[in-house]
Image (cartoon, rainbow, N blue to C red; front, side, top):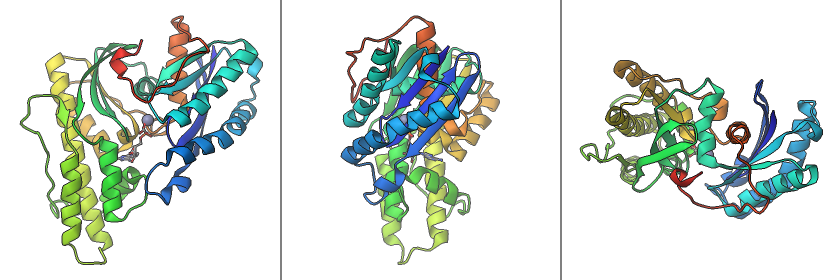
Length: 336
Ligand code: KG4
Ligand code: ZN
């Protein structure tokens, strides 16, 4: 079964072709980073307009590169939300047009389910599993007894982990998105040069808080003489990456112990973070949980994960009507 995936929830236009036998055939991403860089974050209206310009040519390129015609396609999976409504509508309307014209099924995909099922592109996931979803808009811990069943155990009280990376990067004078830049610079940082808090450590709930960390970075930066040296930037990045990875892994493994799961997984853009990946691997080995990190290409927003999640739903007999609406917010627990 061949399924096209379409992802336009934020600032990446992405399309993919997924085959239930062969896996990912092609995954194309057209990034809008340059467009939004001047503004230090994503401008929703600019994102929608760029999706409009990019999406159809990208689908043409997908068909050409994979030497496939729309006649061979069994369904189109598309991100229905959560995300920027205008941006989502570009993908959703395009999916509807293809499905209506070709009389093939459309499958709406929850963006977070897509991120979680990106792990299926490495190997079949093992259950019950505890999943840490960390992206620009989400930081949550989800108990997953099987594919399609998601119980949210807790999450951030303020900023998401990716937001903490991006906002801190701005304070240090680094470009958007800050996560990958901080991750790279942190490799040259000196351990112990700065000390940032790990908030809520004694709180028994599954909760995160990252807004204090942002303040700590601001205070540290304000104390430094100008210009800030490259070494000082690297030192701040080092401690920031440590603090975020410590907070995230503490809660992931607390939840894993409490629910006696077999495996732990990472999902979302921040799962590309080298420290988070290595720390999770170390702790999983220490406590005896199965863990394999998601492939780097499928951590940040991509359509392969949407096609994979949509294909799973299609195989299970689930399709959506062409009046399906997009949504800005909706918890994964309520996604059927
Ligand atoms: O999942 P994603 O592509 O988009 C959302 O759904 O939000 O995640 C984007 C987020 C950004 O905040 C970006 O800074 C962060 O993922 N990110 C990283 C890394 N790569 C991307 N954060 C830390 N380390 C990285 N290597
Ligand atoms: Zn995402």
